[in-house]
Image (tube, rainbow, N blue to C red):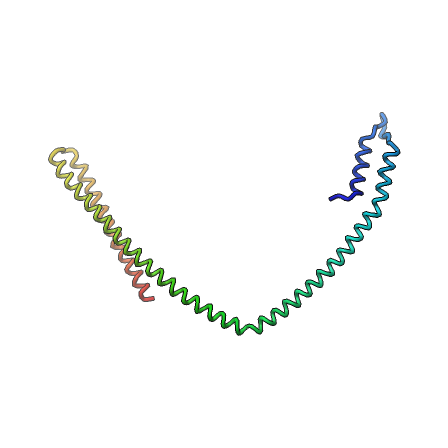
Length: 196
């Protein structure tokens, strides 16, 4: 925020800019009463502003002194607190030991939860695999019957159905191989967890 002195200087500049100029010169016509009034107020405000700045400077010194005292007080308090902490070292060691016991118990409980979740996931996966295999067996059976019916009625359709049947059989075989591989990995993982 600008001071009153700065405002007065701005007003004087604005006033001078608004005055009429003499033709062909750099001189202006000034209303003596108006300019005198602005200058008089400027003279009156200058000591007030100087006093205000001096007060701010002295307040600054007092604030710095208070800040130094507070800083020293904080340092003393921190030193005292550090001494107390050193004295409480044995209590902290006991707290660490108890915390380690809690962490170990929580780790065991978490491992049990993970083991149970793994077993449930494996059971769900196995049942899903069986369901998918049953569905593909049904599709394969339907296609086989379709091929037989088509052989009786449609000669051109037989080749297409045979190709489709071969693709399904190949997919089923691949699926079975993936299932067996996944089962081996699950069994190996279960064995690893059991040994832990």
